[in-house]
Image (cartoon, rainbow, N blue to C red; front, side, top):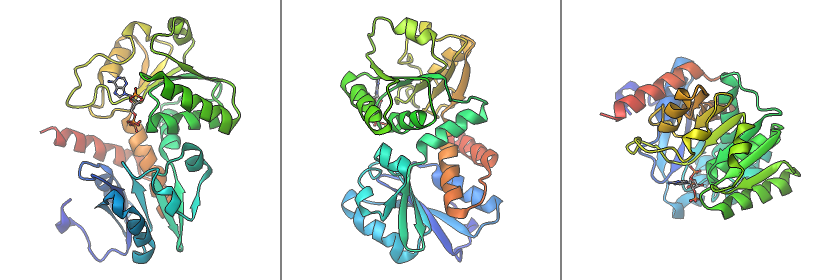
Length: 294
Ligand code: ATR
């Protein structure tokens, strides 16, 4: 961050708690958005050792921060220190955004909603569609619960470790009282038939992430068809090996960049109560990704 460009008399502070935080693109994205809207806000990265998380959260109140984002490894651990947690965050069991509401700390999870917004931006409405999620980690969990809330028709979750997909499915079935969610193994016999009916495929695994971008996608490319939308949460490179394959197959693609921008935009809107400048935020992130490669 170039401090000479920043008005240090700014009053409203927000930021990011993570460990580590130095590679995060959020500070540059949010500060550009504040600047564009002429808002008197500053976003700062804070490297918070897990042992100091409680004190850091108390510091939000003590220092009068308007809110923070949370990243690895604090998303779950922060929950006991908050005054209130939104329904989505409670269901997902993770918080990525805190808003300081006049001394009351409220936790939200904007990942799932951010992803759904990024799909809507590409004119994809989830309601009554069939979706397949690859992976069963934190990101998959946020997205799967959101898909459940949005009224997806059939939801399939597949994972290298099948047990984790099964646990996620059980949790969704129980908490959302749904019966249309199924775990699949990578080796499920009728995978091909199931995928024929899939409208949306989302890869939440880190496979294909820079610098290891010349890898085969997790899913067998022959299963991708032109009637599906394919999304990869990996946003560096913007066009991953999965998205390049999907492109060749004539499928519509949605980059993970959209989720990054929209989860941030929802946090921005929670803090400032202003509409986030999506286009600018997206351009800033793309530039940063390009510049960081050199
Ligand atoms: P995130 O918060 O980004 O979701 P995570 O919680 O660590 O990260 O989850 C990573 C997911 O990617 C997991 O589902 C993981 O599969 P396992 O549960 O079997 O570990 C999946 N994953 C990671 N590397 C993978 C690989 N090389 N091939 C297939 N799946 C992979």
